[in-house]
Amino acid sequence: DIVLTQSPALAVSLGQRATISCRASESVRSSMHWYQQKSGQQPKLLIYGASNLASGVPARFSGSGSGTDFTFTIDPVEADDIATYYCQQSRNDPDTFGAGTKLELK
Amino acid sequence: EVQLQESGPGLVKPSQSLSLTCSVTGYSITSNYWGWIRKFPGNKMEWMGYISYSGSTSYNPSLKSRISITRDTSKNQFFLQLNSVTTEDTATYYCARSARTYYDGTYYYWGQGVMVTVSS
Image (cartoon, rainbow over all chains, first blue to last red):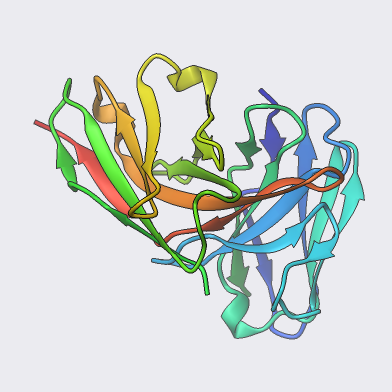
């Protein structure tokens, strides 16, 4: 199975940029997707295909990368963005997920 | 608006079977792919499997001997059965609609989730 590695946590200030990385153990081309999960809620799709914004998602969220290295960015960070962010790959079966990066306020 | 709602027992005894229902509104399960994903305590997520618009299934090899996903198209519901559960199957279980494209791959729109504890 493809292993996705994320940093456990990231502390940012409101109004600043947050950058979350996800590294795959082998190439997933552009089949990388990002989700936001707030406490007590289900994961919500934000980015699909590495860089495509899901419907209704604000433009301050963005994604980039291909192959093994991917980046998810929030710019600027708002208070409502405090959540855990997960990457997911679908290049190889079975689909796998990163362990999540918890976004915290400084 | 597409909505998915999981239901089922919140407590299952070890060695028994876990059975969950996903009720879908706003979209026919005879279109697209419909799956189950679980999140363990500590945040690890695992894709479990799916049932397709035609009724074909695909399962995570790690679960292949214990899992079954079926459907009732007349009720627009699909089901998860996981046999011989242990305490390691304690998790929040989500049903999800998957979207697939050739270039972008497969991604998910999730139900609210149901927490299942395996304990005697």
